[in-house]
Length: 214
Image 1 (cartoon, rainbow, N blue to C red):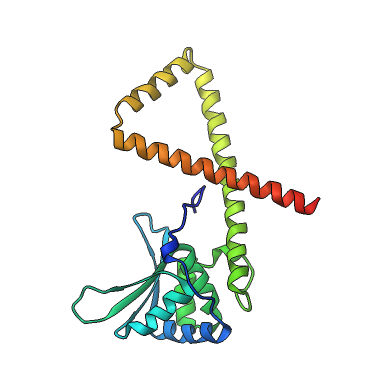
Image 2: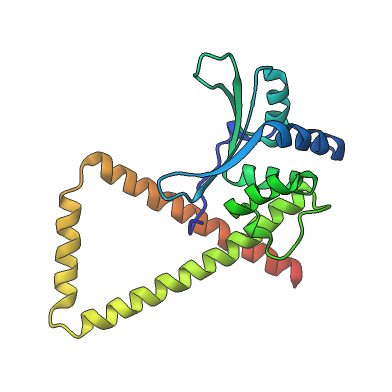
């Protein structure tokens, strides 16, 4: 998990709220044609897919759980519905109780439901699952901030023992910035801006929570 979640793509969000019957129907489709896996270079991303020749079924899944429908590029005429990240986690949590032992083992291997802790996904709604995700991320971000704080403090203690460490550190940073291209500098500015907005939202959310509990 990242320290600050990236903004989600709104074009991949769900457009409808599935009923219990819709979730049971989707579970049957996933049981027969679905698959989940870890993806990305570090295998930390999560992807859930369903392959069908009839895209109508896949469009229903897209409307309920988000994601996108594409051709599988094999010339077979089949289509693929795919959702990634938190959308996939919510989907897998909703259908988990309907799955066979084989499918549950496959889901457990990806640790897709790690954010629930010891809580069973049974009878949890989509809104409750999203709340659980936010709580999980909040705890994780706090752990990352504490780890970064300790690392910076240890680095400060190491540098302080050497003469001129502050000037050497500033020179090193200046030399690194001078080698960056304009594109890299712009990406760095965008990242810092997104992180600033994320931290601002966290502070505002904490203030609202404190006002509600007061």
